[in-house]
Structures are given as C-alpha cells and as structure tokens.
Image (cartoon, rainbow, N blue to C red; front, side):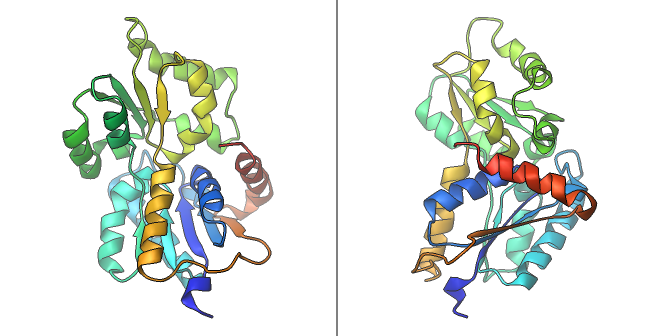
Length: 262
C-alpha cells in the first residue's frame, strides 16, 4: 500500500476532537481518518502534564500500530503537554497539534478585549504562555473546568450548561463592554459555539483553531507528497474509544455530534 493511501490518525481525550474530524472531512475530501477518543481517561484538562503525556503516548502508539501517515492531536491540552515530546520521539512523522486562535483574534480585533476559554492545563502551559506574550495584550484567560464534560455527555444546549456559561461570562458582560472576540481554546467547546453565541452580543466574534489546524495538516501532507490523489473508497472515517463497556452509547453520541453543522 502506498503511504499516501494510509489514513490520518486523529485523537482527543474524548469527543471534542470530533469537531476537528468534521472539519477535516469537509476540507480534505480524498482522505480517510482513524479517530480515537480516550474517554476512559478523560478529562485531560485537570491532569498533570506528565499524566497527559502518558495518555497521549499510549494513544499515539496504538494509532501508529494500525498504520497512519500523519497524526493530529485534536486536543489543546494534549498538544500543550505532549506534542513537543512526541515530535522529538518521532522526528520523521507528521504530528499536528492544536493552538487557541489567539493570534487570529488579535489580528481581527487588535484593540478589543479578547476572552480565551480553555482548560486549566492548557492555560498554565508554557506553549500558551508564549502565545499569550505575543498576542495577549488585550486578552483575558478564563479556565473552564467541567465545561468539556457537558459535551462528553451529549449536552450542547441545556439550561444547566447555559447556567454554567452565564456564571463564567457574567464578569465580562457586567460593565457593558462585551468582549470583541471569544476564543474557544478546547475542541470540545466548538460544539458549544451556538449556545455561547446566544449569551453574547451579535458583535462578538467566536473563533476556534480547527480550520487552521486542518490547513496546516494539508500543507504538511503536500510537502511530503502524502496527499491522497483519489477520492477515498467506502467509509472515510472509523471511530474507536477507550471505554468498550459503554461503547454503544458513546458511539451514538459521537455520530450525533458529527451531524451538527459547523
């Protein structure tokens, strides 16, 4: 089998990375994908960086063993904790990570307040601190422990979710100066875009890094001659999860999330 015909591996701590898979399916119509959600070890966002690395390495080894031509770490937390080390360990392999769209928000709203929603581990990482030092002049970092679990349970619009978000956003709306942009710094949060938008003025831009990540993946594949030249036959995606006892329910939630329009 020619390397260019191999699938692309994508993984996340759970279901959030499906938002990246959804974008990749649209932007790379000739490619096939293997998706792994490490739901048995979720959430990553409240673990130590070393614990996240151990999880990420285990998943990476499993996907590589199945035969993939590139790996997308569709998790901001795992990118911060593990991407650099994985790239050092596999220097000849394409490994693409996530980055909060803070630069995009800075470019689009250079003088407006920017609110970055992310997990505590992501916001405490050196990778994020470097990004913030370059583009965070008007940004506020807002850790959101517990928010990804709503998506994991298939909840993208309940009153409980809205109450959580109202409490988090209230301090930034109370003075009448709503943020110019909200950056969704976790792939889970992308599925909450519509609900978050309902709680903000129409003028607030809601940004994420999914398209930028897939564009970077496409560039790297093209550079190494690994873009699939023909449309993929049959099923373009395969999903797997690390909780087999609950796999039927998890798979049903995953299919529901993939059907949500971008």
